[in-house]
Length: 266
Image (cartoon, rainbow, N blue to C red; front, side, top):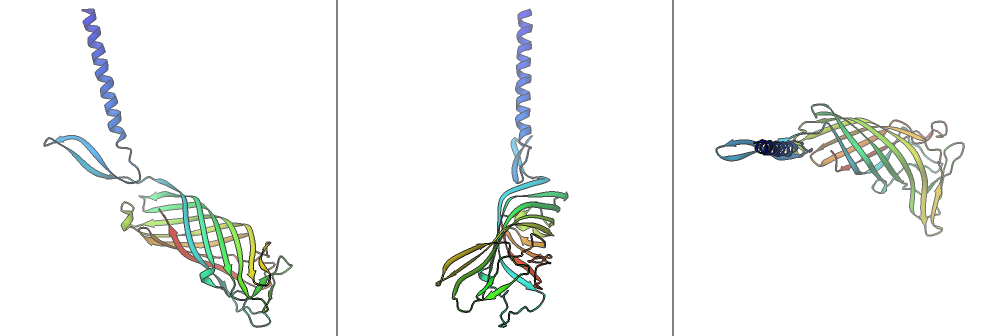
């Protein structure tokens, strides 16, 4: 009799463990990703298992390795001219590129995934391609350009590398249907200049690179906006700080403006 009771207890324990394991497996199916999933309902209706689409957005979502590309121009508060009447800030905009790589960007839901806070870390590369044969001189007490009309320059660029921190408020009209959602983001973007150099190329002297700070502002602050639908998104930034150090700009009050396309957004 004791052996029978022992066997019964062992059988009941085995059934209990099996039931518990099954329950844990079924529960794991309700841990949803940031996507649409088909989830099984454990209710027998008409002899058939029923399935439903369940959508659940994470409150915090992080993306890695984002990229955006754009074109640069410079906003002049005055019509600056050299002695020969040439504006040193005339750019070939098509060749003035901006490329930003984001090692990470994060979205934090504030109100029902419709109002979000977005922040991240970016590495920004700016190119300013001068139309005229001007040369931005290395650091002087004041910013200075020279004009070299005897040179046929194939390339004449100022290049700057920044470490940036964007912070924006984001509005999503349909956070559960990304392909149909209209989004609008606005905020600020701070930056630290980590490197700057010029690159010039001509038949007379070949390629010449000059690394210097060129009296450029060490820090930048820009207003930033984004607009898009689905995977198509545009962005724009306008600096509220000047390109050159305010104490060494020689009167050149220049503000960078960038417009471009953001790839693989939230």
